[in-house]
View 1 (cartoon, chains in turn red, yellow):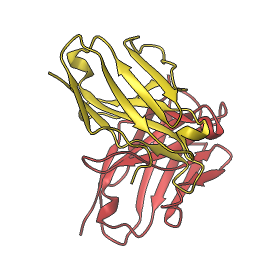
View 2: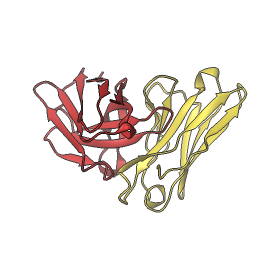
View 3: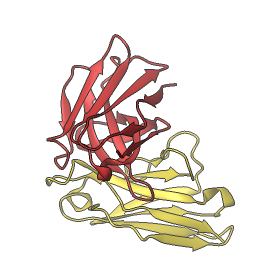
View 4: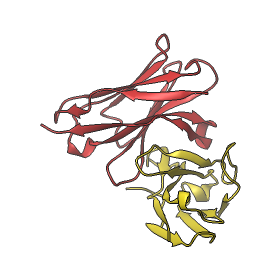
Amino acid sequence: QVQLQESGPGLVKPSQTLSLTCTVSGGSISSGSYYWSWIRQPAGKGLEWIGHIYNSGSTNYNPSLKSRVTISVDTSKNQFSLKLSSVTAADTAVYYCARDRGGGDLIWFDPWGQGTLVTVSS
Amino acid sequence: QSVLTQPPSVSGAPGQRVTISCTGSSSNIGAGYDVHWYQQLPGTAPKLLIYGNRNRPSGVPDRFSGSKSGTSASLAISGLQAEDEADYYCQSYDSNLSGFYVFGTGTKVTVL
């Protein structure tokens, strides 16, 4: 079955850009009508949807983060990536990648990657 | 800040039934959008528990059940077991500028 794995630096300096990659295994990122999402969770807090991308490159972003987020896809590597610019301590969180199921306003998330902790600190 | 409100915690003895509420508004649950539920065991990623208000993915015990009415949804766990101790989150779609896909505030279930 499809599995997802996040990777990237665990420490980012304030004002810099956070960059993470999600590698999909057990299936092609190009097959099926799936969007692929990034979701984050600050320590001890709830979940926040960041945005998602289709294999064509079509994206949607959380309006609260839209000005700082870019999600891209590399179908040749079966990966999709997240860039979050101008980070502050408030962006410290565990970042998850996940596959969207359903469609449009009926989307849920399954499966999820194991998550990767990103700390913003100088 | 989440637009879906859950109680911070619920608890019950083994074998008991507990319910978790997820209260939204006219721009999400009340607008007819489906509710989905996730279980997050300590130190792990969330796992899909219920989708489309009441559907269980393969492998999820039938002790877990979901329902929706009006602007709220509920997750019920019957025959509570020690391994059910976890955080639970609801999720839906919001038609306002609240983030498209929104999660609940989360509920910690404690097995006494």
